[in-house]
Amino acid sequence: MSKILYKSAEEIELIRESALLVSRTHAEVAKVIGPGVTTIELDRLAETFIRDNGGIPTFLNYGGFPYSLCISLNDQVVHGFPGNYVLQEGDLVSVDCGATLNGFVGDSAYTFAIGEVSDTVKKLMRVTKECLDLGVAKAVVGMRIGDIGYAIQEHAEKNGFGVVKELVGHGVGVKLHEKPEVPNYGKRGAGIKLEEGMVIAIEPMINAGRAGVKFWDDGWTVSTVDKKPSAHYEHTVAIGKGKPDILSTFEYVENVLKEKHNN
Ligand code: MG
Ligand code: MG
Image (cartoon, rainbow, N blue to C red):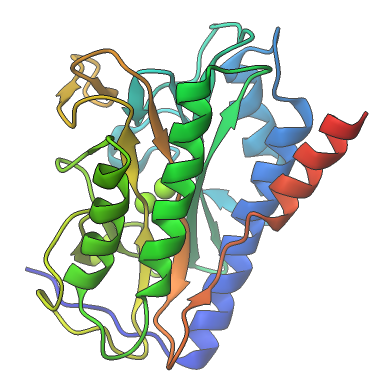
């Protein structure tokens, strides 16, 4: 069992740089994502953008993962492969990205709607993002891991959605996956105490239907058992005193989406 790797203030600033590179990569994806675009094109542009900015795509070759982005469509939950699939109106696309810069890792995911999506999908996206915000709000000194999971689970289930239990958030920063595990479910006041120097990835994976998932024979892709859509948002967060320090941001990606919407 590995231990929690506590980070100095200087190291947290370096992780912020990496997380902001990931956030800018999501904005680059946002510029081109839409009907008629293949998911492999998004992967290529993300890899090029990360490398052009001095980074390394963390996911590429991680445990043998063959791409720079995990792109998970509709009923796929996470870890989907980019490929020749042509995006079409109504698709729901989760894009997960990691970047290593100066030896430090940032990790963030964003779920995109392609054109007009169903009301259920709109609600799923909104509630999953709210789950992330509620979980992040608990990432403060003195709270416990279970407080994060409880906040996420309570909000998702109150809205009639299923919380994926087989995959969890994680410590991050020196490596992509560090201790502790950060489940999207839990009990208030349970689990390890959150302390200064901890950096975690909080990443609710929320299903429109049942919570159950299945693992594909490709060794990576995870999808819902009932074939209903799933959404995924993720931030890299440093545990703060009084308030969380969110190291990634959705500001860049959402500015691009707003601008596209207005044109
Ligand atoms: Mg991720
Ligand atoms: Mg992650």
